[in-house]
Amino acid sequence: MNKIWLVLRQEIVNTLSRKSFLFAMFGIPIIGVVVFLIAGQLSKDNPAQNIISQLIGSPPGVQTEGYVDLSGIIKKLPANVPTSVLEAFPNEAAAMEAMKKGEISGYYIIPPDYIQTGEITYIPVNFSPLGSTGKSSTLDYVINYNLLDENAQLANLVNGPSVIPHPLSAAPQREQSNPLTYFLPYGATMLFYIIILSAASLLLSSVAKEKENRVIEILMLSVTPRQLLTGKIVGLGLLGLLQTIIWVGTARILLAQGGSIFNLPAAFQLPASFLVWGIIFFVLGYAVYASLMAGLGALVPNLREATQATIMVIFPLIIPIFLLSVLINEPNNMLSIVLSIFPFTAPIAMITRLSAIEVPLWQILVAITLLLITTVLIVRAVARMFQAQTILSGQPFSRKLFINTLFGRA
Image 1: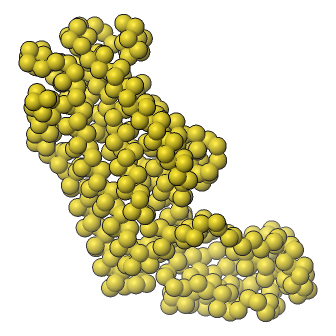
Image 2 (image 1 turned 90 degrees about the vertical axis):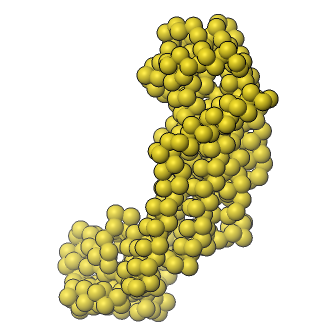
Image 3 (image 1 turned 45 degrees about the horizontal axis):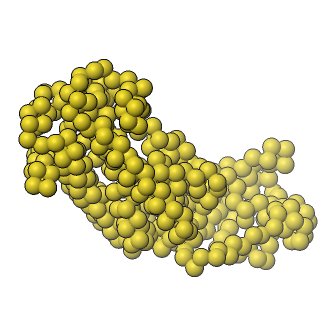
């Protein structure tokens, strides 16, 4: 136990002595806080230029849109569409002036040949590829209302039924049209992917470098291979855990503060349970991939070959990244559920779903249970690989050798 502690302490000291690691752990969150504070101050000084509102495409509090009807179709608004929602302007200059004053969030131009082309131009207050670019349902309704000789019932039928969602959960629901509905889970996913991959890669780099520099031959004189493996996994895992707490904790605090500074809806605040589940899935995901990386480092003769062979180990972790749009847009379909439960993809896929929706507890517990079983099996298999004759053999790396050694057939 004392020797494991010595290896653990040495790994922590060596890693903390790297400026790049310290910058990644503390520098990036500090930069994020500074950017957040600057953006918040700019928003206070000039609320009309709210950063988040620019991203979404409309100033805060302004819900009115305007229209310039050059076709003469719209003769009157239905009784259930007030001018506070859709306001008419005689020409584009008047609409532009109203938008500059902050009275409307954008305006539509209905051209003279609308009946033939069906095309409408939309001018938003701040152009954004994430913002709306087409007709609103309100404008559709108003146009159809006038084309059908002011028959509101027929206009309702043409525009389709009005569906009002009644979610089973009492939690605030996110608007699907809001860009943050996609980018919040996207950011959380990439955050955990980077943390797990970087922490596991540190272990691979440590083992491969010591093997290439022949330092590991000296270490073998005083510690057993399993003591060396345990000390390295636990030591680097503790640093990775600390990094996870700092990064995710900082992100959650900024999101909570953003609710008041940037008028973010309550639905975009990650619950405290997200940090708890995030730590659990990081620890288990790290244990699986760090162990595989350690086994890879034990087989390869040098760091260069280790880097080239990494893709074979981390490929399952990349699959959720490839299917990120599916996980975010359809988090409850069968593929998303399977990816979030399958042990080798669960550390990333489950984080995506947790940041996108309220995942049923049974799915989370099943994923954790399968990950625990996989972790135990992988650690035991890699411990068998971590033998002196394997580490010191110096034989060229191959996929067949890695798989056979992992399953104890080499």
